[in-house]
Amino acid sequence: MTLPLRIQRLFYRYHTDRLDPERHAAIIIPTVLSDGTVEDWDWLFRVYEWDAIQQWIKEPRNAQILPPPMERFWTLIFLGTLKETPRWTGGNARRIVPEDALPEWFPADLR
Image (cartoon, rainbow, N blue to C red; front, side, top):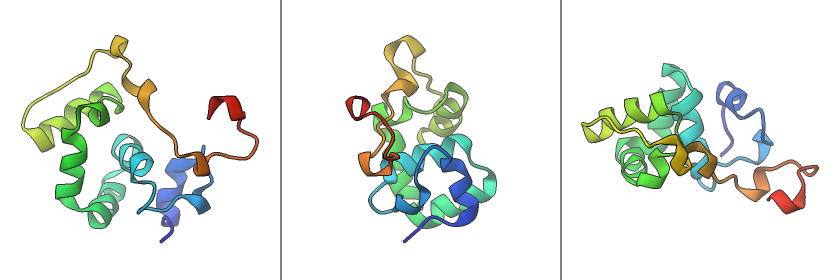
């Protein structure tokens, strides 16, 4: 399964033709939650379903990679409480990018 064209615009840093919703949920879920529109969220919930995304948010390390406003928003929606990770603990810097989604020119020592 490939990403729909309207969703691909969110992944301008990646080879969108290589991103697969089944294999790359770890990058697709936070990107769409962070940068998507309501229509993009509709697609996300159709593909992964509410329970799977809720489980993803419940994992503390996952919620931490969202930008602070989106972390507060989605933890309120899914957990019923506002949560914000102090940025000095790592936050969005912890995002893991699947190696096969990186372009060939990306430096090997940074993978």
